[in-house]
Image (cartoon, rainbow, N blue to C red; front, side, top):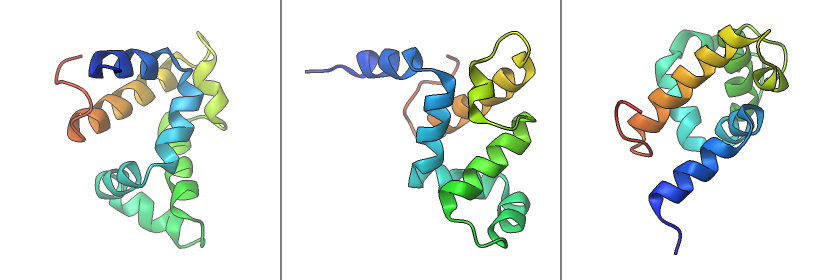
Length: 102
């Protein structure tokens, strides 16, 4: 049986770009992001994009990158990585997937 600690370790072993893609497709993340970035969500959703595309657009804009693949490029995108890590940590804590203070 896989333990919660093992699942967390597997999650954090994946490249950030993969985790970002998985988050953008996750309906719970989309709802959370919509609440967090309500105005940006509204602006992007007016273009007729699906929720995963809106989540992707908000994530890219917030991290100031053009592609989720940029999240795997250090050190040139270290600011984007810091923004993504904070966003991911806030969501995972809000969703009960990660303890506070990791």
